[in-house]
Length: 133
Image 1 (tube, rainbow, N blue to C red):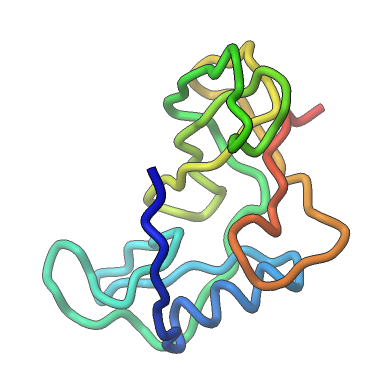
Image 2 (image 1 turned 120 degrees about the vertical axis):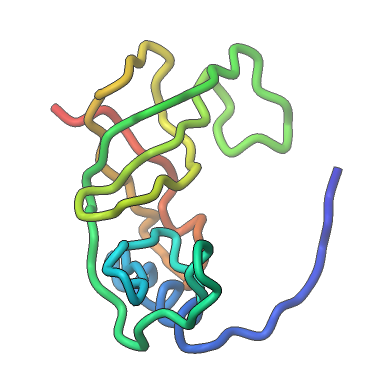
């Protein structure tokens, strides 16, 4: 299933995507100090706007939950078995979903991003995460 749509980018999401093109992962800070990554424009708890300045998190993180894809389909990001994982980047209070190029994971596994050589300011600028050595 595809849900193609276009969205205008404000300073928060636009800043996050610009950071990815520079191999930096940025997050927003809520009025109560929670760090949201990926960033949101508004605090999901209070509805208040987040701070205008983004903070850098990661780039390493910890796997909290995951699901292994044993037989990838043609539209999947990797052509061999991998996992979708909920990753809490260092310094963030929330998790983000991304691909991990591994199938043997457990809660607490440390991962680092594998960046694409050519980045365009999109979440896929992180090709995947891989288990930290």
